[in-house]
Length: 62
Image 1 (tube, rainbow, N blue to C red):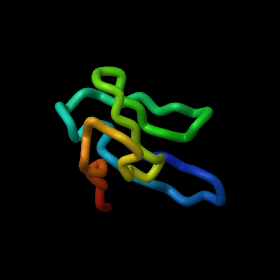
Image 2: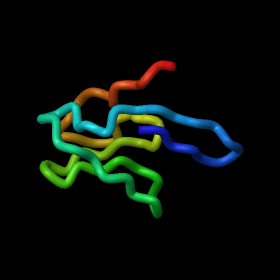
Image 3: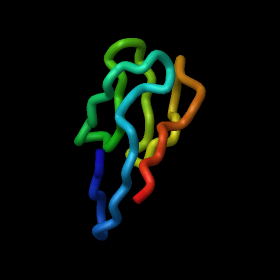
């Protein structure tokens, strides 16, 4: 999944929760990746905000 945030910077992350693999939803208002299964939340560039997950999202390299 590619995400373009301010100033044209593109962030590529795998939108799969690192806790149990649920598909994440992007929250456009807060600019976060949210897991509806167990509540983990990640920043737009894939860093964990809170769990139960304890790992950042996988980055997708070019």
